[in-house]
Amino acid sequence: MSTLKKTVGRTLALTTLLMGGAIYYFITVSLYEPSEDLFDFPVPKNAELVQENIYGKSYDWSPTSEENGIPLGYELAIKASGWKKGERDGASIYYTKGTNKIDLISSTKHLNILKVN
Image (cartoon, rainbow, N blue to C red; front, side, top):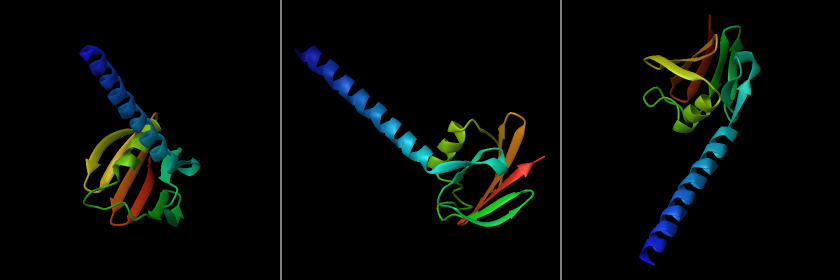
């Protein structure tokens, strides 16, 4: 009987962990949308576009900072979209997907997403 309780307990714990992870993943991903102008790089849905030019877009977005970078949920959404994190240079992080490259620059409450040639 003790072995059965352990097995059921482990199964419930594992199921709870997996369900929690799946729910977190889908909620996190649903907060971002691909930008066609930026090689379908994910952009936070609640970020406010403040500037746009041929090189990229600038957004006001309060969760980002120069010290801490972007939130973990945004990093997960970028990774889930197939982008690979590359080198970091201060507040700038490079991401690649195939032949496309993005420079993501985070500063206090501001986000720049630039296409790299």
